[in-house]
Length: 164
Length: 453
Image (tube, rainbow over all chains, first blue to last red; front, side, top):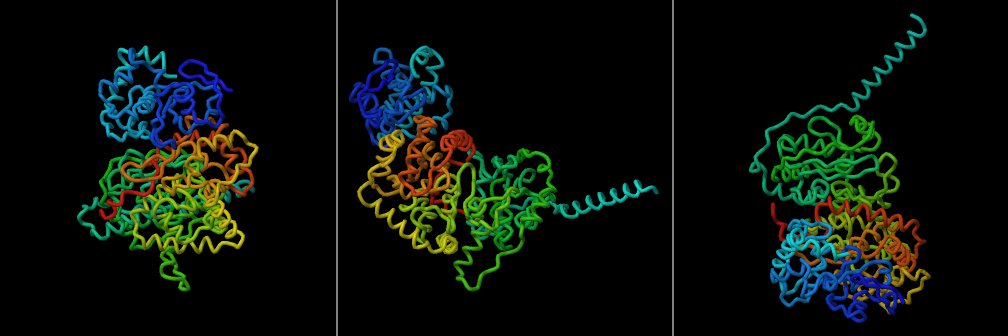
């Protein structure tokens, strides 16, 4: 039994220490934003934020999360009150099939938390671990720029509340 | 004259002789500046040959900073003596080689002296380049003088006294620079001799793979016995090679051509860039390098050969049961690594079985730590091996536990020491390296570029 802190809440988890975090999030906690894509840490669909950094949850075992704080997309905002990153992705219509988008948003969120005004090149470098097979990359790029803008203006409070 | 005065004048005379001697040893004349020659004055075939030679010489790796134009210099090279910045070797008149004649260029390659007569630090590996033929220097000169000129002055080196005094380098050269062109070994094939000429000279393999002495010179008695570069270990590439499966000529050829080999793993760190550069070099030169290096490695001893066969047999059979007391390391391996590294998907898209990885059998944990932290980033526009980095998800103690487990499970070598400190250091230096290195370290390069002059 171990305690796992997700989106600000403690959960008691009964799983083997080598269970990938993704399985715990989806199967035990029913947080289904993070997706199983390749299972090899090569596509980014499973990205979540751990202590402010993007982590690929499909290749990260539970035992590495003692005393750490996990944030999933559910922790950033909701349909009623979307976080700036979610608003930006919606406004740019950056999803096609949408399977990669939760991971994309978490990777982008982690980037914007450490670098509020990234250049195009910095966004490309940071988003490199995340793949989109529909090919919406140009919209995703625009969405990350838009999110950076949103975070600096109207919705700065949302970012403060969530993220870590 | 009193005794004291006699003594005084003798001392003064000796000091004078000393200064004169230092001057005589260290002074080099300037070579007259020329007007930058127009690119069209150079022969296209010569330029093209120079391009291949520059790739073999790995010139761009040190003389280019990430995100900046090729060959414009400015890369900080950390040495035990301080930081030395690479120079601009584009044909810019003020800040580059624009006013250098071919004679001046050849003198720099042969003797490590710039056009103005100033000694160059041996970070520029003229101890190897000294053997490059006139013909090859001419081709390299033609290639460099026809690049796009970039105005960029080299930064001031950060060296402490007396090493910031360039006459000191003259002393170093007296001790360690052995000028002379390559003398072919007539008992060997032409291919072998070509390989020896390239490996010992322009390719300067020993600059990383040979350990250095306290004065920063390669130890002649330990040639290719393994050295250090940019917080990576450059493995021994002689009989002391730590590779679990002994290298063969064919394996080396595949590795240098593709950047990976199924029985050895993936070229990483500075070697990835070497392979990337070599990708524009024709097979014949790679074959020559391999022919020579195979003889440097030598035939494996029966023991090593048997061990290699055992490892291969074990890798190809069912996975061995993990046996280790380090529970954390084993669990991390099972969850984070084994899904790729034991999936038996072939390289480069599956991970190499770590029993075959030289990193696990190497003398220290640096290379393994670097790869676990940073992973292998995908190469833009080309197929390439990839691996996620774990810097964000594991702390130093966890990576250390993992590495200690990997060492005990996948090699027959003694335990590594100080692994956690090594991880800590790797985490610190890799951040710097990622900012500076020319590009994300990958191999091979875009083959469509090969024929461009």
